[in-house]
Image (tube, rainbow, N blue to C red; front, side, top):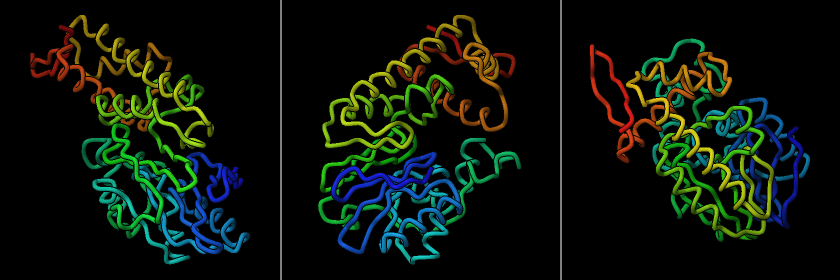
Length: 292
């Protein structure tokens, strides 16, 4: 863990729970793509920088989930590097309490106020084309989170953030976190056709061909959507839908899974309603979902 793996002449990744990209800008300067899940991850990154005599100039965050921005504060404090994130994700990076609050739908209970969902605040600035190093391309990858992006380096390595998961991860957790289902599928369809020297997803193995895994993720989304529609052949409230999905997929309920899977299921329900496959009605002061 936290091994530095070279992909091309200038592009690397650090093996960690959420892969951290590292790109050499010249003989001494490097930038990171994300920073890991906590202060300890930041320390391990700093050790790699020091061992190679590199100076960190900037961290480009793909999105604001805590496992991608957790090392920001430590690394910024140690190196004075700039931190950039796009749009709403920049706001979440500056005010990370927004993540557990958004997931919970109110002030988060203590069980949700921990480093896996609540990173330390860091002084992030808005990501624009102007702040990117020469030759880098910002790739919009909405769906998993609000304004998530990926990056293509000058030597044609593409860092894909959380726009797809490995088959093993999906087999274990079944329902991956999605904020906007329609945008997520559109992103995967785009990624499926992309070409690069190497793709580096945050939660799957680096690969030269991403198309098969992208299609696998698309198929899993559609499987879960069909499962929800099938459950809603009778009118059901959200809590019952969530309970039956957990039972169907053999998942164990706790606060983290309740908010992560629960938020995702609400996104599925919104997408299925907007696309004309579910109807929503209020009955006996309950919001019920029913297949059309």
